[in-house]
Image 1 (cartoon, rainbow over the protein chains, first blue to last red):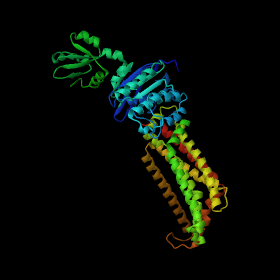
Image 2 (cartoon, each protein chain N blue to C red):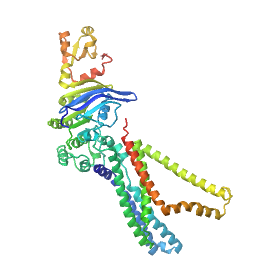
Image 3 (tube, each protein chain N blue to C red):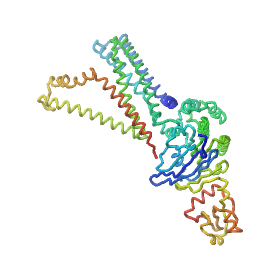
Image 4 (tube, rainbow over the protein chains, first blue to last red):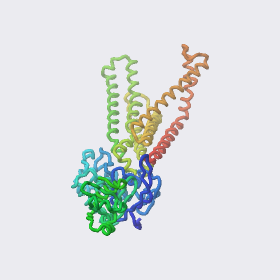
Length: 292
Length: 259
């Protein structure tokens, strides 16, 4: 299992629902890296993750984890992955001690010591029932469970949504620690792009079931920019050179995806760096081309 | 699978304890009735009424209490798994659908064994308290009752796996039970009417006692005797066969992924 290049390989993943289609999604998560999976609500992030985790069956496409086909090596793969969801998936009547007893017999590599160390570090009570846990505590508990069986891949679906910045920072630090081992990888879907800007190595952006962008975060941020123009100058810009434009009474702000080319072609124009948030907003409005 | 059995056990602990407490309450009631017959108000009743009360409580101890125990000890947490988002999470765990369903069956089989042992001891106590002859075949009867409750319970759980919705599954289960009830009842009525007509009477007629006795002796006793002679194996086979079928259908239902 060591000889694989990508922790996750998705090729042409398609799933059709009534009113929504996940359309030929393809991307890779390189081993030892963290990928941010971004997109607005209903874009297809959870569907992609659910297909990857065999929670739903895809209609078409090839899914691989650790270089193995997900369908034919399901059990072997599941021993080495951990999933973290936005909702606690454990029964509220249970407590951490019971959870340890349960998961100890499910995962071969489960370490009660690691689990209780995480609980101590997160200041989580061992005997308190989960129904009395706050949202932050529940998320920390899920992460403690996810990191206690030597998983090589962590898949998180909106795991940091709804958490305050302090807890989020604490959790991001844990992820960075986890990635110290170069065998470990993370796929993290989130709305909170600022978190991903902090820790992600690569980013995949999905919208309306289609992948719009995928690649190294630094490359994406370096190639994109917001070009600020007056209304008169905006009228002379070639529409093919920008993704979409935010036009106000004061002027226009254009999202460009080839900064170097634009700098040459529109010399003198102010081009500000774009954040992942900006990229998301401008790409989502790409069909309108012009918005305010 | 052991982890899933532990989960099932933890989650159903409360229900099982309530069942045990109910059993203990009924046991105390049975002992109080006997004490009352010996020293209390029931002792003032005539012999026939006393015998009637003793009989009722003896059969409650012998068959009613095991029924309560079996019904309370067979559990499945699939509806609660759904509510707690555990079902989705379980798809990410290194466990197969067969193991998930089997964990419920294994725990309930352990409970079937435990309740049968408790019921057998309980029956011995009842015989002692009410001065009855100990019937060793009781073990077969009680296992039969346990087996039927086990099969019915797992039939219901199969619907939980299929519908993934407690209300829907329970509604469907009730409809099936009512269909069985009315089907069996209707079949029995047809059987009886055809016998009555064979005897030269109509269903609405005032029937002489001999006709009903004849129905009992000629028609009804035949299958009962057949069961008594060698039919137990058929019932056991039916229980095992149905349980295996429900297990298989549950695994298939769990393998079906939702949207």
